[in-house]
Length: 110
Length: 118
Image (cartoon, rainbow over all chains, first blue to last red; front, side, top):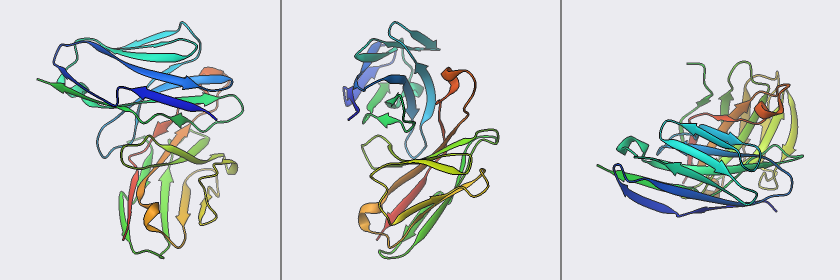
C-alpha cells in the first residue's frame, strides 16, 4: 500500500527564517510526486510535479527536490503570506488517484 | 473564472437524508476526480472519470456513494442515507491527459463542498 509521511506536522518560523519540509514516500512504480498548498477552507493549489530522482523545481521562494525515498520543499526567506498547509502526494503507475500525506501546517510570523 | 467550480459550497443535512454535489471541471480537461478530506488529514481519493467512463473507485467509496459524469463534462456525487461519519470536505479535481506523460496527472482542485451531517 502506498504511504506518504510528512514532517514536521507543524512548523512556526519567523519571517525570513528559511527551512525545509519533508515528504517520505513508499510507492511501487512512482509516476510522479506532487506538492500542493492549501489555505483554510479552500481546495489544494497545485505547486510542483517531480518525476525522477534528482529533479528540482523552483517557484518564487519555494524549491522542491526529489530523491528515491523522499522529497523536500525548501522555503527561502518566507513571508507571512506563505503561511498555509503544504501537502505532498504521489501517483503510482497503473493508478491515477493521488495518495496524500497529512500535510505540514506552516506559520510564518512577522 | 476558468477554474474548477463546485456547488454547493456548504451543505448541512440530517442523518439519513440524501445529498448531491456538483462539480464543473476546467473546460478542456477530460479527467475528473473526487476526493474527501477530514480535519487534519490530507485528501483521500474516492473515484475518477475519463470523459464519461468511471475508471477507478477506492474501497472508501461505499455503496451509499454514487458518482456520475453523464456527458463527460460536469459530474455529480450523491450520498444516500447520510451518516455522521460522512461529514467532511468533498473535493473535485480535474486534469488533462496529454501526449506528454508529464502533464498526465497534474490535478487542479476546486474549492470543495463542506458537508455537515447532524
